[in-house]
Length: 127
Image 1 (spheres, rainbow, N blue to C red):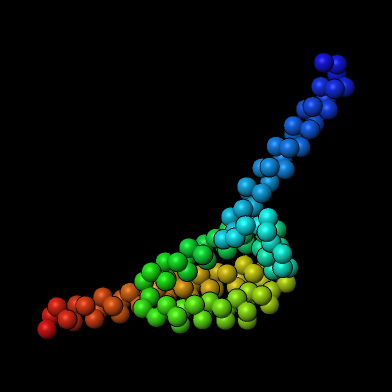
Image 2 (image 1 turned 180 degrees about the vertical axis):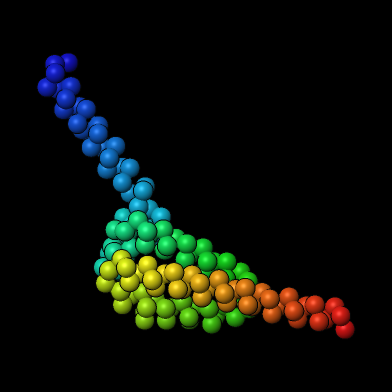
């Protein structure tokens, strides 16, 4: 193999490795970034911190859903948050604030609901 052909092969291999590695580093979002269509999804996928927060939020939501009694209310709150908070953001800074606040809300509500359930169970055992 001559030197020019060898260089082309190496450049192509580096390009393929670079392109395939890129989605992996940004694919922390709770959805497939390759299928992102709407601007907010593209914004989430374009920022590594926001993408990670999106995945963290999905985990916090799942955990809250497992612990909270009123799952329908939780779903409605999440839809409202998406529409009125997250989807109103136009930059990563806004999304970071929105995600951090929502993760805090979900964590607090799951803890509060779990604590209330524990207190109720404890009262039943004492009676």
